[in-house]
Amino acid sequence: MAHLSVILAHPRHGSFNHGIAVTVVHTLETQGHEVRFHDLYQENFDPILQAPELNGEAYLHPGLARHCREIAQAQGIVIVHPNWWGQPPAILKGWVDRVLRPGVAYRFREGDSGDGVPVGLLQAKAAVVFTTSNTPRERELAVFGDPLETLWKNCIFGLCGVPRFFRKNFAVVVTSTPAQRQAWLEEVREMVGIFTPA
Image (cartoon, rainbow, N blue to C red; front, side, top):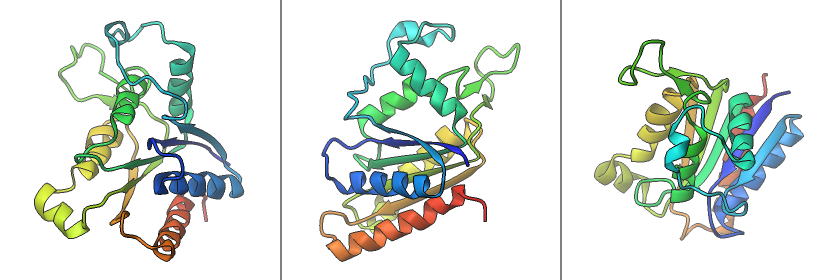
């Protein structure tokens, strides 16, 4: 049906984040989608953006070029990661820096020196971000204001031209029961149903 990209960023195999990613991939494949899955830690993805890559015409290592090609072709994107200090893990931030690059995820209008509003290039019609945390939702909103929502919705997918955005945070993971986790995974299955037309 659709080409979908699923990106996981959690260092511990067997984590609930891994459980989410496995559920996402299995659900989407069962629905007939072609899924391109990347476990960034398992692949040892290099998050360091080197100066030569800042050039839009820079040579890209084949592995990085593959990531860029896949995300440019994706008709839907799913990201899975924990909330660390109100941010994604560094490996995922580096993936954003290196993969969602000019010419792949956005461009500036002709004659724009880079200080204008970018034009989004991603083909994806929707993006879903699943996050986990050990902070109760009420405290997250009252004290921190949920910076991950702003980051993914406005600063990344909004800028890159993805029109529909959905996010679900699961908390508190550290004290959750097996039954609670199974209920959360059922929510995951339901949410990724947006990629399959009714």
